Image (cartoon, rainbow, N blue to C red; front, top):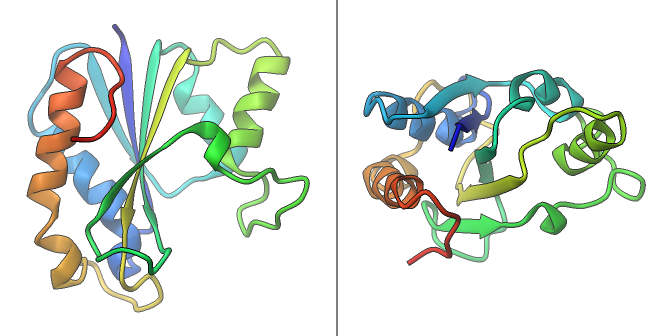
Length: 157
């Protein structure tokens, strides 16, 4: 199965870079049939990356303040708000962009998995995650890698 891992975030805003950091660590593993891209783009700009893959895995940060920093969540596309009712700084969100891509006939992956990592700080300038998030990266990489190797979407352990 041709898989794209898309690590999303801002590399100069501490924990906001965690999606990029996790994707970079997975890239070092050179998994077969897996391409890894790190990006700061969002919304409709992501369509150019995802077209043509069978499976898309998005890794990004989330700040709910409900769980400890470094907690890994598995989300569905439906869990992401609708741009028609929600305001986003990057324009439309990924859910809306994927819907638009499908309507326009783009070859959008049939399997889309979203892994969001609870963060502590996404406003401080810095090129490293906070210690609370950074210490969880190896475990997150391990969990996501096991899911990728199983070649089928799963729930988190």
